[in-house]
Length: 242
Image (cartoon, rainbow, N blue to C red; front, top):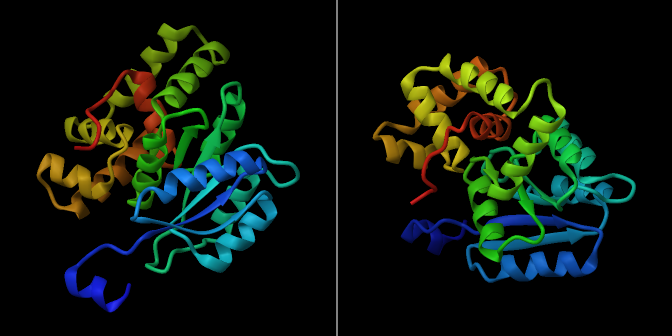
């Protein structure tokens, strides 16, 4: 943060690394993110292995990774970034947004277990890409509505029981939460950060952080993105960020 930013309290730019093996897609992602003056592209590559090195070198706020790349794909790159505990200049963990296409549901489920924070469809609206990067930079999970719908449908088609059984099972898991925890889970599923949730429900951010930790533990999920999928499966939703 420079002196001017410190003086007026402005937030420093969100620093982003992009990895996609398709040059046109990578150029499109760069062009969309460049329209937001609050986002800075610090490096890009078409290779997952190099993406890991660039993230280690630049310590960005967000890494935008293609879910499927030759050699080291986005899932493996994300897992390596997580194992390396890469942090931003502010000390937070680098957030990971996965870029996916329709038909990659199995990859999405693997990426959920690998610690990805957000999932976006490559053919989605430009505004969604910016919203996803901003949400993940704020520490939130971000699931494109179409990604969430695809994952829930995929789970219903491949898991035990039919869609109604899976929804009932998800609802039973969610029912074990307190009313406040269910409210927090719905807001997590809507893509809100801890700070946004705190403002929405009128508590301090530390209280929200404790609620989120309890929700993850009670549901037996590893991260906010997995919790968001479960919330969508249970039909538990809330309004998007204001």
